Image 1: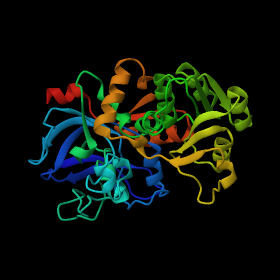
Image 2: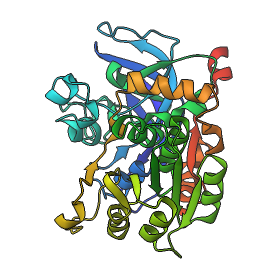
Image 3: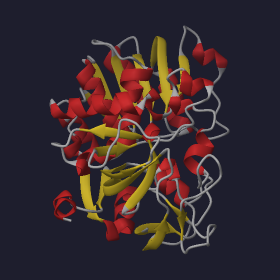
Image 4: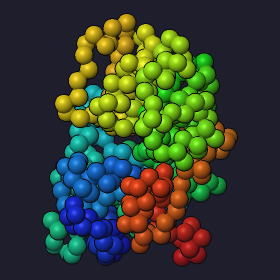
Length: 374
């Protein structure tokens, strides 16, 4: 079938919206007509080749839409269902089978290789021209009017909520909220510092407030984001450009903080994070760190720990509905974070996200009203 998709030709070139061909779904696949998709930093990393992915490529991995067709082997989904899309996993490795699909042994292949796990692709520029463009990014490539997914990364949601608001739940907000609720299992009365309040950081902040954290410290260099953090539940805010962060956190907490979530990936911020911990405290890293970043073993005395966190340790089919219910109850106000763009303005959305002017850009690809009239 003919679709429209935003293609990254090369890392220095703007995305171009063009017509492509998408095959019909296989027995294990779902055809989703896209309504909206979030723009995430991971898309930018793949575009600019900070994450190795083959180009040309159709990116996009925070999609939301309506199921149009399902393969004969797909259960639990049917045409007309409203769905949110998330990361892909193999479903067969030890991590997937033990309920940790975010740490899938084939995660890189499943999400960044530009093809299905069997090496094939359903996306191409012309019939017979199978290698002209890559897709299946995060098992979806949702910068397009249609996407092929599987039941592993397609989550059914209620039809009375706006899909354009739910789209960002599939990656960034899931990562932040999941780090707090799943990885840290943050308990009522515990404390947390969040380094970097972008989409992931705000997901963590809103989840920490919902969990009943007694102290929530937001750390950033953007005054507007720190102000919004206060409105959304931060008990304290710190400007990292003018403050010794570790000392400031100790001054607030006394004995140090029990949890730090670092979304920045900066070596200096990791040093502050470890120094700010209370005994038995934990640092979670969702942005990795520079390859030369070193934590002296002595800094991990008194039971301190540092761990990597992928996708908030989430099982999307369970966790995205949880976030939807948190939004419905007023505890996860996604609407305070998003700014909408027409699909053809995708390059502007990336520019605004990169400048820090917008926390979570969301592309409107189609309106539900128009889809229902067709």
